[in-house]
Image (tube, rainbow over all chains, first blue to last red):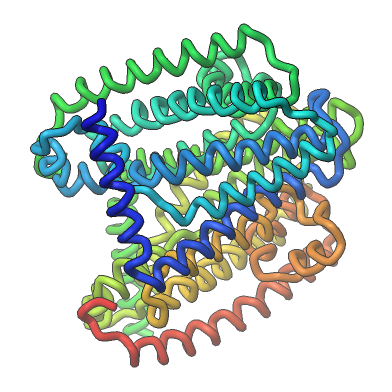
Length: 262
Length: 267
């Protein structure tokens, strides 16, 4: 465990050096990051511009969901999804060989090798936006509440990571499906709305989307003081289960990796 | 005339070859379709809640038809050729092999992109037909179909030419991702994917409705919903023709000056 923490610390340093080495790329990535952060927040602002409530949630509460989504998903994009984007290329070109020969866990190497530091700005933007709506809604956030939100957000990230990793393991069988990552980005967007939005879908589809809806809803409910213990336990159980599942699926998928372009 | 006939036959042959290629990667097309489907479904479900809470400026049948048609428009009319033009042809230098061929680069790319749009659009039509079997919502009258067909055709031409220009910007920029990101962000709002442009706030609405992106995606959807008079349809067709002429002129300009910068060994 400590060995992996040491490796990760080294990777953080290397990624930081890399991001500052190419200045034009750095500026470009910062603009893109701020732009996407703005669009993500502003699009829901526009969407709710003509309404007062949806599924019993006020406009301000929905916007608070969106702010929290920006923060949690921002961390996910900074640390994890940036690695998932190269998943299909690594498998398609047979580069996975090199990763498999390293004396570290292949899932760790594929999931945490890259860090996109430019997304920090996006997370900060979403943080300010969230604070603004906490203020508008008059929510008095206690220290314990804040700590609970951070802890639950960690489990949300584990759940999201496990769902992404399990799905992308399919690329071992068909590496041409590089756009699967974009589909995951799309599905992940369901998390920015109250759970009732996805609940409208017929049962089978809702069952698929249920884990995604827990990712933002549970910390948001804690922040608003509207949580139930059932949803917290559900998140903890599902994140542990899906993490275990992602490990099993990856190991199973590796048996079918044919080295040269899968 | 005979030469034109031979060229047409060759273009058709290229189109069929690229169709085979697109069909080979049909699962990839399905994933692209699911991306558009899930985004539209998400916004539709959100509106459903707002409408059921009785505080929306919109009605449910209108929202259903809008987002269902948006799925088709997103699959059929939203061209994605720019990344290939920028990353493969310009930045990796593959453009050289097209330059040696006796065909226009524009038309080769056109033939390359069209099969993908048709396959993904077909998925959208299947969803629309399935929805029509279970749910009633407003659509245009058959008398308006010829106008709508023209709007769709011009919308596609406009979308394709616009995306080719976006791709050709790689002649000047070292890192195309910035331009690509900016273009995607603008399209997301100005094409009407999130909400109908008529529901945008004042100034933004005026800019969006007059812009080229609305004429590629948004107006074909509105026209097919049956929300436009014949005069309104003609106005859209007229504006589309003007935008196409402008973008074709711009394409020639960008292509000629861009080629002078092209090194053929990658950018």
